[in-house]
Length: 157
Image (cartoon, rainbow, N blue to C red; front, top):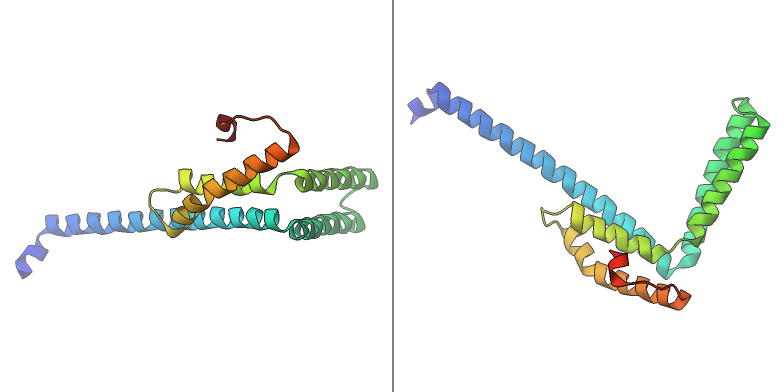
């Protein structure tokens, strides 16, 4: 048995198999972590749908951080006052738009992303997203109907 592992072709084949297994493991880990990240983003938006005050708080904190960065640039002289005013207007506009956007729509889109882009392999996050997608889609349809927005099912895909 010892003689078989001394053959250079067997050693090379073993090395190739080991490298292939390592590459497969790295790809699996990457897809798993991306699926988890996208699923958690969908969960964030779903929780914002259920609790709009949480959304308002998170976006207010995000706006405050962005404004603090701008304030720091202005104070250090890296930014002129007119540029500061323009950038401040932009981040305030972006914040207002984020507040208006549908949280359940984004939850559905993130769940859909997990299912369509990160499977196979069939990780636990893919399974969870696949379970939550139909409910999120129905809630999104209800939201659109309540707002009087006309739509067809194909438009939501």
